[in-house]
Length: 220
Image (tube, rainbow, N blue to C red; front, side, top):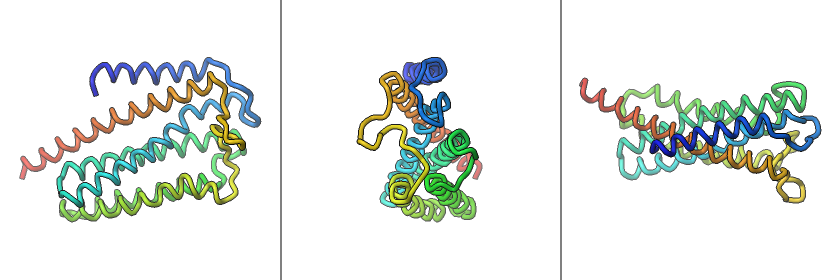
């Protein structure tokens, strides 16, 4: 990422934080001003899906070409996806505390994201348990592909086929955007800023893993 994009990312996220705190939002029952957590909760959940998708794409590419860079990119994306899933869980727990009185209620959305954490936690356990690089890369690639199949189900399908307490703060029952203009602008800016931040961190992680691999090879 170029320096100008880094500065732009910093400005967008800083602006979102300031605007999200200062600018008024419409009254939302049971939440009030606490609804501002949406500016951070939804982007983190969104980026976890993007990261797991990228991990799946590069896992397929590794199985096709057996290039180590594809395994590195898949592994780095899975790591970021796991991190953003944890952040989505934490911000979602805060939302649950505001709305339902406790941090965890085993709501379908909470349960589904917990299962995703277990699934991708097993991915890292699998990688750490295998010494051979080729076997580790191959098996973890297969696992990442299978694991991603569960992501759309747990994130998008399960919460819609099972009764849930979780509201949809973006789209109302009539299929219309459930935000006023100011709140929508801040939300979209947050989504943009966090997406740019994701790819910035992702690029750094990939470069770091490449350097680690080169260092290991030079020491052999």
